[in-house]
Length: 253
Ligand code: ADP
Ligand code: MG
Image (cartoon, rainbow, N blue to C red; front, top):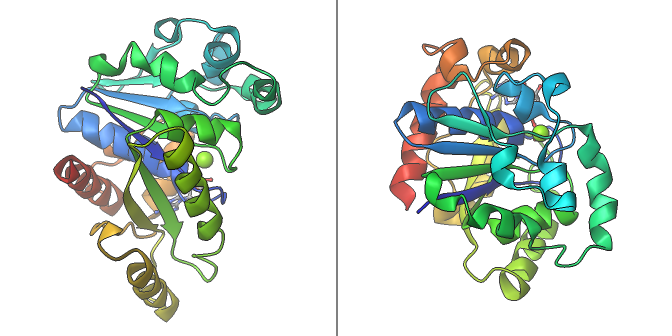
């Protein structure tokens, strides 16, 4: 039975997409069958696994709004064992269109039900908001992974995210758990990074992943080549740490 993990934080630029793409590809590299779901209209996870958005005719928008069968939008990637449900800019309208739709919070959950068995992991890259797309992702998921950037305002906005998670747990998805908080873009040369780690650990305690993602240039280069880090530069520090994270995510279940 597939485990569904939402990568969510309403703050932009904290490493959601980098983590979604890298973790998905590393899980696939470890032999798991993985589906990466892009639910951000920017479609960066889609292009991050080498899919040209210009060639995509149907995306997650058509599944959520027009009830298209999700099996018809799944694409293969150049990574063995890794499939993707793409997102394109058409998804930008979904947030508003969903408001007046029947069962608006559970559409993704229903779409995933028929394919959940086909995968070991389904990873959902969320958009930078707490709107209906993120609510759909949290409602469909078993667990949430929260990337937190090691910077000055790291904890800002997290209480809002946590109260959204509590609301979803109460009204839409009792099973949702926090798998973990992932510290990203750590820079060992600054005291600030170390302070943020201490602060986040004090707040989230054993919910913080042991793996910490450092700043790594290769991680920021990989998207423009349309290759996950494990393909783009398997010997890089970025590939090593995301492989460690994948093993930790597997152990957590
Ligand atoms: P989000 O999806 O939360 O908006 P991204 O994953 O797109 O965040 O990351 C924001 C930017 O930071 C991107 O340009 C990405 O390439 C870069 N980035 C993310 N993680 C790292 C890292 N560990 N080291 C260096 N650059 C990173
Ligand atoms: Mg993103």
